[in-house]
Structures are given as C-alpha cells and as structure tokens.
Image (cartoon, rainbow, N blue to C red; front, side):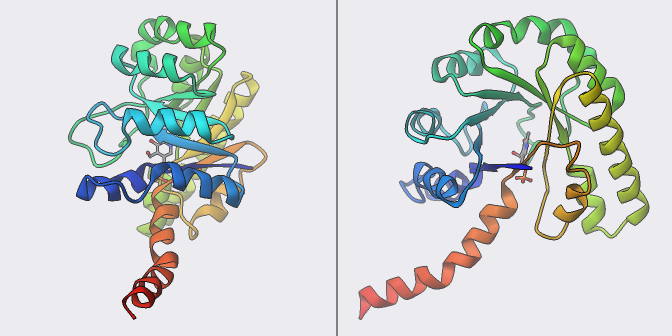
Length: 240
Ligand code: PXP
C-alpha cells in the first residue's frame, strides 16, 4: 500500500507565527527521503496553512508525485492548471471547519463536477473525489468521470478512538463495500483522514482493496514529539 504524506500541518505551525519555519519544502524533502510515495497538500481557499508558493515549490523541486487537495472552485482550478500536480483530489470546504468534515457530495453535483474536471483530464491530471464510503457516491463518482476516489476514513477513525466497536465494524464494512464497488467500476481507490499508528492496522485489513493512504495530522504530530529531544539538545549546545 502506498503512503501519501500530507504536510499541511507543517504550514499550520509556520502560520502560528507567520514566519519562515518550519519549511514546508524541507518537510516534503524529508518525507521523500523517508520513502513516502507522494506528497499531499491542501490549498484551502482561506490559505490558512499551505500557500500558493508552497505548492509551486514542492511541485517543481520534489521528485515524487504531488496530490493537490482542493475545493472545486474556479480560483483554485486556475492555480492547479498552472502547477500541474500529478493528481487533484476534490474535497468539500467550509470556512469554519477545523478539518475536512465529510466527503464531497457527488450525487447532487454530477453535472457541475463533470464539466469542472474536463480541464484536468485534458491536461492528464488524475482526478480523485474525496467521498464518504457510500455506494451511491461511488457510482456517482464514476458517472461524473473521476479516475479515482479517496474514501473518507474520519468516522471510522473517530469510532476507533471512542472505542465504539459496533460503529467501527459498521464503518469498516462500509469502507469494504465502497472500495469493492469502486474497483469493480474501474476506479483507483485511496483512503484517508484520521489514520494513526493505533488504528491503521484495521485499515490494512483492506489492503487488497485500497491502494494508498493519505496521512497528515498524526505523522506531523509524531514528528514534533520524536524531534523535540534533538531540537532542545541542539539549542542547549549552541547556548553552551
Ligand atoms: N485526505 C484528505 C482528502 C484530507 O482532506 C485530509 C485532511 O486534510 C487527509 C487525507 C489527511 O487527514 P489527517 O490529517 O487526519 O491524516
């Protein structure tokens, strides 16, 4: 199973001070060096973390595929067509949300999405829709012309961390059914959101069906903790 590393929250830390560190580009190089198969970044309309320049730099300088998460708006599309990532993942976006809260509703927006993605297809950019593990949404994704779907594992992850094992089984079943149908329809199948060292083994049960995971918050959180000792020691070395 491939791993896409979402580096948005490196930028979240940078934006806490609106300064130059930590470097998003450096983070992408490190993820690549560690063996990541892809860099994932979400250029939000409010630019709360990743900025246009981050996307341009990573696309130009880091030699692994870039998966650009984006809301299906004209403004972001113009940037995506200029940057030409290997893949765009269309996600819903609400200004007030802390993170992407649910999947994109393809079913209610088929005509819009069908015509929205034409430019990407003409530019050989893979189009993925971030959807809830819902059979109707999978079928609608195929109908709208997606190449791939990314299944939203947020509810699955939440039920794991709340120890709601009944809901967890239900969610896993939904993921399995949605992934199976998507593959039957010839779609590439990815998944992501809320995956941690603790819950990933349950997603790996579906590794025959899911080709790739996109993981962000947990990896960046662990990077902060694993790297803290070295960072403190380095500052003490300089002081002494
Ligand atoms: N996939 C998509 C489409 C997302 O929107 C996000 C969150 O930005 C992720 C994966 C990664 O989720 P997390 O940060 O919880 O690992």
